[in-house]
Length: 101
Image: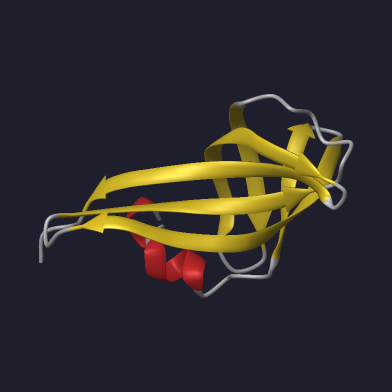
């Protein structure tokens, strides 16, 4: 599955909901609101994801388990980067070597 977690996979899920597990009994709903490509080469890609969570989400950076109906379960390191009247925003940054073809 790790090779499938690329820019294209996430771009296809823009504006969809993810469940972020806080612990085994509780979760919050996140919305993927931005997928941004950074520097890319034939060998590697770099991109970031921006999620919006409810305002009461914990402003703690750590690895969170996310669940998505199409992408399944994934563990992402999320960093809180902003807060406004609409919620708390988390960013995940990917720097990955492209699989050999």
